[in-house]
Image (cartoon, rainbow, N blue to C red; front, side, top):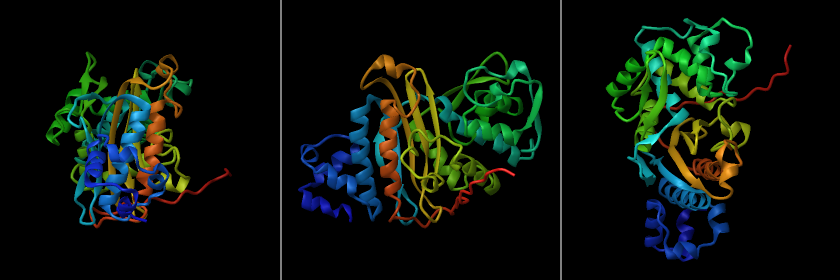
Length: 345
């Protein structure tokens, strides 16, 4: 079933344009939601229209202020926007910028300046007791881990101590310069007095989208580092409360994602791969402000019950369904390893 069913639903070109631009049209209000929800796109154009409509509906329901960019790849690999809302606004990235941190660290690995098996010391002073992550749960310091272990903790459970461990091998000023050299002038961390520490800083939806696109095109890192980074972001240990919430285990392995949250911000960015491992949809979603419902209850709620995360979960199902029958020839494939449950030994 294709989006050509629009004609049967009485939709005109104005409604389609309104969906892509993220603006409501009168004709849209008359559409059958059940018909659209059941739609499985068969072309990139139909996928863009469905994604745009779903984004508009769910973000309006969630409330808040959104800045986003979602692109869908054509069969020839050219990615075109489905959603482009305030895409150049500089936003607080929060932990979404941990992808950029990992890119900078892996850039140094590629240049032979550090190695993934190089060890960094975990002292009691460096551990952040913020109830997030895993290093704060160790209870015994000092210890040491590899750079690879620190990156895995950084990108899966979003461990903030892992940010400091990354800073030991890639100080803030060097990290920012690496990103600027790659063309990212707004995706920057915020240095502090200690040169090895930083706040996670800012980005724009377009820059985060572009970073992810350049990553899968092999324009940021070596093939080995690119595969390593995507493998971590696609693991079942990575964030599941947003885009991946309504997906099965096997489906989650085809979505590389990273969330970021603090104060009123609820962000997520990533890539949806088709069954062949081709990156088809890339998304960068940044939301903040006053969301729907009880603002007091929302304030410290970072779970899947927050309105912004409910919106992302609903959108995630639509994103995944949109890659079931469409594909692209470029760039290269990144196949996920099938999940194998294990019961110990």
